[in-house]
Amino acid sequence: EVADLLRGKNNPCYTPNVDSGDYVVIVNAEKIKLTGNKIDKKLYYWHSNFIGGLKQRTAKEQLVKNPQKVIMEAVKGMLPKNALGKKQLKKLKLVVGSEHTYQAQKPEVYKIKEG
Image (tube, rainbow, N blue to C red; front, side, top):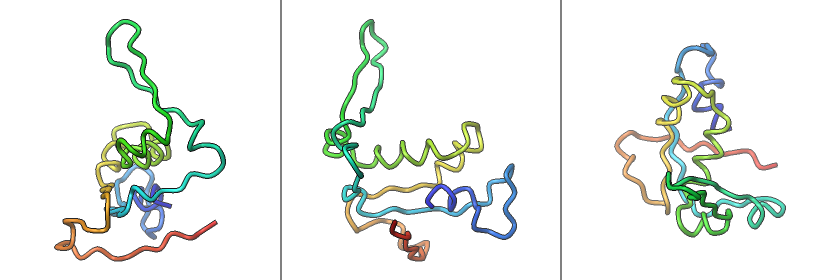
């Protein structure tokens, strides 16, 4: 649902080639739950640009090190793989904990449907 809000698919004036989405602030990013064995079996890869520098980390280790990256990578995979998708991903704000600095923008609470 986060990707749909970022893309603007909930708006009546949705157009696929126009960024009409909303800004989304996700609080308590560290409290994410993964179903099944993904917490132990899902791997995150990156390369250090040195020979043999392919690194990996499990989702459990990633949640301890940087919980925002787990959500960011998941949402990034749901957005278009072009310049518009990059622009829409910049509208996603992730916060560890419940306190954030976006109160001046008067954010509205949006409840995600369970299941």
